[in-house]
Structures are given as structure tokens and as C-alpha cells.
Length: 187
Image (cartoon, rainbow, N blue to C red; front, side):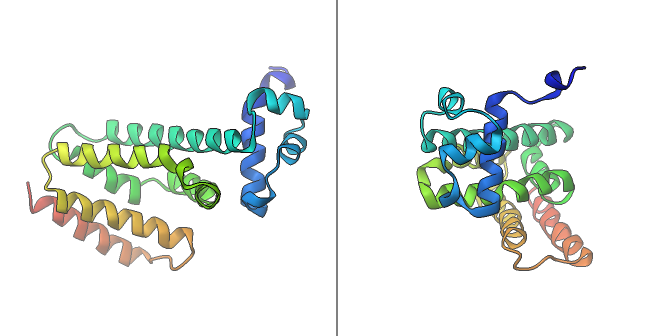
């Protein structure tokens, strides 16, 4: 494979560059010129794909939502079919997938920056979470149990994101057992 064939396309390079800028310096530092420079493309080349900073941010959020959705679908597919499949997937998503946790932590800065810039940019992520909630309730789990499990996972994500605390292995095992117990209480 030639070096050119291994190089990501312009759109991907620009999105990667925008993400890197946001993660390093925040959304306020993201400019069309800076993203073009970081991606090693002309400003015109960038504008061909993204007409504005808002379009660039929207595309970045959609890429994030698409990636999280693909991760979710793979985890759901790995779970045995049957009741509570979506919530078992939530637990696997939270506790069993360190590579996914790393990806989400890496992109969390983008999520926060986009929210700060324009909360509507999070709509693709909101749609993803609405989908998970709907799948969990459709599995026959009472809404309160589904919410408790999902909110525990979200809380753990936020604790890690903001480096509030990192639970130890024993605490994580206890939390997971408690959440599995909630699933078992409605079987």
C-alpha cells in the first residue's frame, strides 16, 4: 500500500484536526484556518467539506454519535437474545469495554466543547441516549430499573470524565453486582 493510500481522506483529517484542537485548547481555539493548518489542507479545501465552524462542529458531533452507535450495536449483538438484552449491553458498555471507555473519554472534551458552543449540537448524542432508553424499556424492564442502571453508568462516565474519582476494582465489582441484582429482581 502506498503512503498516499494509507492517508485518511480530507474530511477525516479535518475532523481529526478539529478534535485535536478542541481537546488541546478548547472550542474557542477552533477556527477554520487553524483546522485547515492542522489538517494540512487549504482553507478552500476545508470549506468545500465544511462551510462554517458550526458545520464542522456538527459533523464532529455526528461522527462521535456514529462511533458510539457502532460500539453500542456491537455490544448489543454480543449479548444473548432475550429480555433485558439492552440493559445487559449497558452493563457491558460500562464495565467490560476499556477500549470503548478510552474512546469516549478522548472525545468527551468535544462533547463538552460543543455543548458550550451550542447545546443543540448534542442532538445526535441525545438521540443515541433516547434510543438506548427506548430499547431498555422495550426489553420489558420497568422504567425505574432501566433508568437506575443507565444513570449509574452515566455517573461513572462523568466521574471519570471530570476526574472526580476513579473507583477501585472492588468498588466497581460491587457496583456491577448491585446493578446485576436490579436486573435479577425483575426477571
